[in-house]
Structures are given as C-alpha cells and as structure tokens.
Image 1 (cartoon, rainbow, N blue to C red):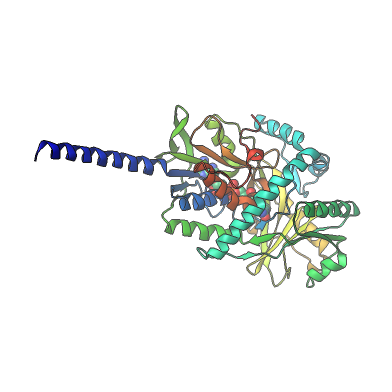
Image 2 (cartoon, helix red, strand yellow):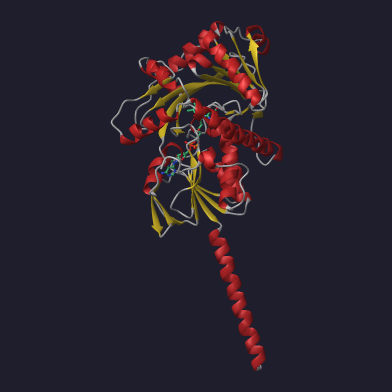
Amino acid sequence: MNREQRTENREQRTENREQRTENRELTMSTSAIIIGGGIIGLSSAYYLHKAGWQVTVIDRGDLANNCSSGNAGYICPSHFTPLAAPGIISQGLKWMLNSRSPFYIEPRLSLSLAQWGLAFMRSATQSHVDRSATPLRDISLLSLACYQEWQNSGEFPFFYRHDGMLELCQTEENARHARHTAEKARQLGLDAEWLDAGQVQALEPDVACDTRGGIWFRSDAHVNPAELMKNLAAYLTTKGVHIIDNESVVNFLKQNNRIQKVVTTRNSYNADLVVLAAGAWSRELASQLGNSLPMVAGRGYSFVKPQQDYPFRRPLILTEGRVAITPMDGQVRFGGTMEITATTTPPRFKRVEGIVQSVNRFFPGLSLQAPANEEVWYGYRPCSPDGLPYIGRLPGLENAIAATGHAMLGLSLGAATGLLVSQIAGEQKTDMDLTPFDPARFN
Ligand SMILES: Cc1cc2nc3c(=O)[nH]c(=O)nc-3n(C[C@H](O)[C@H](O)[C@H](O)COP(=O)(O)OP(=O)(O)OC[C@H]3O[C@@H](n4cnc5c(N)ncnc54)[C@H](O)[C@@H]3O)c2cc1C
C-alpha cells in the first residue's frame, strides 16, 4: 500500500467516523420522552413518531384510567368560551353551598390553590373571553381536522361521529345568553343556530324534552374516548413507540439548560427532548424543572347506561346543570361537575346525584336512577387559571415542551396539541400562533 493509498484510507476512515458520529447525533437528538400517556401524551407520540423521532411514553398508571378515558368524548369547536368567564365567580359562590351542584372548590390551605384562584379571578373578564375565542376556535378546528385524518387513514379503528351537539337550556336568562352565543359562533365561522323547543324535540324524537330550546352546533363531533385511547396506544406500540406503564417520573437531572435524564421510580432515561403531558400532575413536575405552571385538578364524574333505555340520538349539554350526555357505541355516557380538589380527596358521590337530577329535569320521562358508586368513573381535568392550555417550550430549558392544562377540552384539543408539539420540536412553523398558550404567561 503506497503513501497515497494510506492517506486515502485514513481520510475515508475519518469520513466514516464523522458519518457515524453524525448518525449517532442524529439518533440521539431525535429521541423523545413523553411524560404522561393521556390523550395529550399519545397524540404527541403519534406526531413525533411520524416526524421521525424515537418516542418513549412513560406513565405512572396503566393508561386505561386517566382523565382521557372516561370523559364525554366531545370534539367541540363550540367551546370557544373558557371556564374563566364573567359571572362564574358569583355563580360559583352560590353553587359552593350546594353539595349536588356542578361546581365546587374544596377549601384548603394551599399556596398554589390561592395563586390559581387569584389568576382565575383576574381572567374571568369579558376581554379575556373575547381574546380567547379565536385561538380556541383555531386549535379546535385544527384538532377536528386531525381526528378526521386519523379516522380516514384507517391506521387504527375508533368510533367517530360528526353528528353535531345540542346545548339545551331551561331558563329565559340562559336562552337569551345562548342566542347571543349562537350569533358569536356564526361570527367565528362556526355552523350554529338557535332552535326553539319544538325544533329540539324534532332532533331528539325518542325522548320527551322539557327545554326552552338550545344551540345546534353542527360543527361538533364525538368519539368513544376509552376506545380511541386503547387503539391509539396499540397502534403506537406496533410502530415502535415504547410505552412504559406503571412507572412514575420522580425527578430530573439537568445540566446547563438541558434535561439530561428523566428519573423514574425504576430507572433513568437519557432525555434529548422531554414533553411534559402529565395532566393534572404537570404543575409539580414543572416546578421540579424550575417552572411555574399554575394548575389545579378539576374532578368530574361520569357513568354509562344502555342506549336502548336512553335513546338519545346525539350529544347534548344541559346548561343549567353543566351536564354532558353522549351516545357512543350502544351506550350513553352521562358526565359532569367541576370539583376543584386535591387528587387525594375521596370522591364525593353526592355530586353524581346532581347529574342525575339535572337529566331528570330536562327529560322527566326517563326517570334516570343514580348509579351505584362502583359504576361511577371520575377523572381530574388539568385546569389552568385562564382556561387555555399550555403548549410551548418551557422557559429556561432547551429541550422541554409543555403540553398540558387543557381543562375541559383535552380530548377536543388533543390531536392538534400533538401536532403542534411535533412542529415545535422540529422547529417548524406551527399551524397556528401559539402566543395565547405560552407556558410562561403567568411568570
Ligand atoms: C367528566 C369529564 C368529562 C369531560 N369531557 C370532555 C369532553 O367531552 N371533551 C374534552 O375535550 N374534554 C373533556 N374532558 C376533559 C379531558 O378529559 C381532559 O382535559 C383530558 O383528558 C386531559 O388529558 P391529559 O392527557 O392532559 O391528562 P390525563 O388524561 O390525565 O393524562 C395524564 C397522564 O399523566 C400520567 N402521569 C401523571 N403524573 C405522572 C408522573 N409523575 N409520571 C408518569 N406519568 C404521570 C397520569 O397517570 C395520566 O395517565 C372531560 C373531563 C371530565 C372529568
């Protein structure tokens, strides 16, 4: 071998090494750890995987019983008004005194609750509602399109219907408010109209409705959330997404401005990208990362009955009782209540009686009976104070993205949140302006 050949070989080896290093860096920099296997975590996994990331999802539970499984399943552009809205404070105070009411804040000594309450009160203004309508509409329409794509792709089956949603009310005051909301929805480009009692009855011919009328949101769709979650997780597994269950993230190792390792009860994992999607538990984890994400857990309850006994044709909301009714896959799910509480406080089943009473007030012929406690599901909504999610990079960290705080809208906004997370991770232009969802907005 002459000198020239040796030089050539050396150069080739150097090139190969450089190539290998580049490949390793590429592989390393494309691995993502997602904390939380709810709809937000799994949607993020779906889109990150599609974008070429090696994805690991870590969940402290079995993924089958989180907030994303037992909810009402609404994909609802109709919900462009955040929970923090004018009137909610005075209404909430009245409801606090009633053990069957749809809204309750458990009084407890907690600095984070006090901070959240203050920020919630500051957000409950008309200008906040007006500012939030367009971003909420945009993200929910994006999400609806993503779910439709999932459905059309046939990658995994799930019950999906685009049957609209009826938001019913009984008092004249709420009817006036609803007409105004329908008008506002139309201004936002949504397909919505006010229907009188007769028109509502025509849409639900099999149950006698006692109502003044309601808003008919043709824009809305719904799914069976538990089935969606189960089949999405199974699909991701077949695609090589590593789903680790029954393992809790307890700590992080940081160096400079990066998370080096995600530490769990059993292991520790190298972290090139970390997505914080731990639902109502995200606040504590964010605080370990030196970040403040004000959030409380909003407990809600649901139960199912056979659709043949409760022959509703489409999703309904009963405004006065804040109850959601969803026919899905031969069953009807009844759900509701927003109970701001510690996740360790035992369930208050009296609230479920409130759901039942509300249904019987709107549909007196049904004589719905309260379910046994064992038949009741409950879950914790991750509630930010302004009712908007946190989607974006966590301040002070180069490799952490927050995707949480979706409150009453996590299922609805789940698919779009996953898409947006993958766009942020890939440093691409996002499909919408994410400023209103900035995780640093309360700093
Ligand atoms: C009665 C009711 C009805 C609802 N109806 C609707 C509806 O119709 N439409 C809608 O859009 N929304 C609805 N919601 C709200 C919706 O369910 C939530 O917004 C959504 O499920 C939140 O999803 P998530 O992925 O953020 O949280 P979750 O589903 O709670 O998932 C978070 C996951 O993180 C895991 N986790 C937490 N801490 C750790 C840790 N330290 N380590 C590892 N894993 C961890 C948890 O085990 C959990 O699996 C409803 C909620 C309720 C209660």
